[in-house]
Each structure stands twice: as C-alpha cells, then as structure tokens.
Image (tube, rainbow, N blue to C red):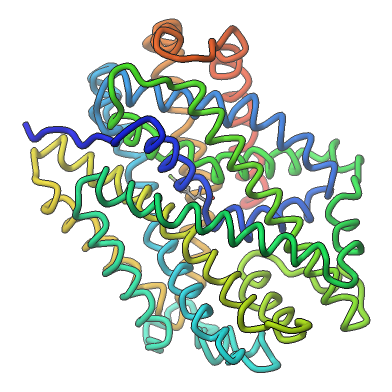
Length: 454
Ligand code: PFF
C-alpha cells in the first residue's frame, strides 16, 4: 500500500480547508444570493444554516476522514461495508463540479487578460455572450468551439495538473500558501475601494436593508442552506479526503470553526465591496441599484466589466484585481474537488499518485471541453442544477443515514473529535446532525422537486 499523503502541519490543513471553502461561490454566488433572498434578513437563515448544518457536517466529514484514514469510499467502507457507495457518489459529484468549475476559472483568467485596456468594450453583455462565449440557441450545438475559451481552460488544466501531480503537502498546500494570502490582500483592497466609491451607500443599503417578510418564505431557507453547503465545501467528500491526510492528534473542531468563520467573513467582505461598486454603477448611470444587479454569471462577467469601464481611475488595475482574485479563489477550490477522486482511486486500486492524477485530471479535462461548445452554457447549467439541487442533498442525506441512523456511530464520532480537539462539541452537534440537518435536506429535496416538476 502506498503511503498516505500528509499535510505539513495543522496550519497547513487549516489553510487548505480555507482555500477549498473560499472560491467562486464566495465572490459571485454569495452577493447575488443575499440580494435575492431578503438582503440583510438573509443573514439570519444563513447563520442558522451555518450552525445547524454547515459546521456540524463539516466536523462530521473531518471526523470520518480522520478516524478512518481513507478517501471517502474507503472511509465509509471502514464504517460499514455496505456504505462504500456513498463515498463514490460524493466523489462523482466533486468530479462533475470540477468539470465546469475549471471553465469558469478559464473565463476569469481570460477576463484578467481582457482587463488590460478594458478589451471588452462598451457593450459588455454582447461581448461576453456573443464575442467571447459565442453561445448558440440550440441545445445540440456541439460546434462553435471557441479558442478564446478553450485556450485559457487548457492553461488552467495544465497548471492544475502539475499542482496535483505533487504530493499533497507540496502541491496543494504550497499552492494555497501562495494564493490564499494574496487573495485576502486583494479582497481587502476591492472591499475598501468598493465601499468608498461615490454612490456606494446606496448599494450597501440594498444589500443590508432587511426584508423580514423573506423569513417566512421557505425558498429563502433553502437558498441559505444551499449557499452554506456549497460555500463550505461540505457534502462532496473533499473534507473527508483532506482530513485523512492529518496527523493522528491534530485538533479537528477548532480547525473547523476557523475555516468556517473565515469563509463566511470572506464572503461578507466580498459582498460589501461588490454592492458598493454596484451602487456606484447605479449612481453614474443614473439608474437604481436593483436595475443594475444581475444574476450569477452575469454579475461577474457582464456587470463588473461595466463598473470597471466607468471606474474613476486605475480601471485596468481594478479589473486585474477582481478577475485575478476570482481566478486565485477558483484554483484553490478546484484542486480540492480533484483530490477526492485522486485519493479514492489510489485507495481502491493502489495506484501511484501520478497514475491517479492522470485518470482524474484527464477525464475531467475531457468532459470540460463539452462546455466550450456552442451549447456549453446550457450543459453547464444542467449539470450545476442537478448537482446542487439533488446530487449534493441526496449524498448528504445518505451520509447522515449511514453514520447516525443505520450504524449508530454518532457518539463514537463525537468522542473521536472531543478526544483530540481544543473545543469540546456538545449535544447541539448530535441534534443537528441527526435531526435538524436531515429534516432540512428532505425539505430542500421536496421543494426542489416541486419547483422543477410541478
Ligand atoms: N466552496 C467552493 C466555493 O465556494 O466556490 C466550491 C466547492 C469546493 C464546493 C469544493 C465543493 C467542494 F468540495
């Protein structure tokens, strides 16, 4: 059996866990989700979701990986032979996310380059969808391959491949050591500039003014739980894998709190900076903030270039800063989506790291080419919706069923965490994992099914 990779220290582990959590989800998904779901009032369901599901499941994943010392499938297998499939399910979810996640990093990389001289021109919408993506209206359009998209995506894959080939403490950990501090400095600069722009307060008001009636809307709660899962990277086997590379005695609970809270802090700061900038755009274009906010992809790649066009000086620099940080944040998360597959193949087939990386990166890179075709954006949407609305929820439910209900291992997992950790975790953890989270997951699944099929 090949020896297991190991992080260099506890700090190294916290760093990679933060790098996984802080990603595209924090920079464009979070601000838009808060805006759509009650503004300031969204913070209430968000924190409830963080405390009753996000952190509890994060700690459950840490403890599974740490106690059973395996990638997800092997860890579940050691829990009980019948449950190995849950690990594979989660590994596949991570694999499919990374196929399109790298595409968005590719876009961010292109836009970092386009920032020099604001090459996107005045009509940023036409530039993104027409000139750059060259999207077609037909779902079955596999033609229209765009070099402008393909080239950066290939560059991303080559870079990621060489990081992944090295042992985890050399490749993934070193990547995070460089990129994460840079990212934090860049974010602070964006936030300070965003909130000090003219008109920024108007944007901040829209973001922070609570609409309390949203709290009675079930879909707001579903959105909060969804955001917390994606943003914290729970439910995708990532944290099981990362925790399996830890030393026997490393603290788990305190590390989990640090990773989770810094992730939330990061997304909150990003939202402040971005809404400040949106307030500014509304101000200079004489419209109101609600008119300039756009959803998901559009916010980063259509509205932000517009903001940069009208920036009062240093346009290129702020373009580089914004798209550069999107690229950095994406890269540290992408490697964390690949590692579950790599580690799972190594455990199962006793492969060398290089062989496993060749299979996983090669396979994912091939699938990702599909999204660079004319119909690409539509496939991306289908895969993203399936994973986040069903695949993830189902996997998390299966995880809880396996550990807490069928095999009755919750007390043992709690004991395992408390034995080695600085911060003692009490009954709230078991109640959250055994009852609150699964009820919420079932509710989300039915809500999503109803929304899509009824
Ligand atoms: N947490 C990452 C983000 O916010 O963009 C995305 C992610 C990474 C999800 C790793 C799941 C995962 F396993």
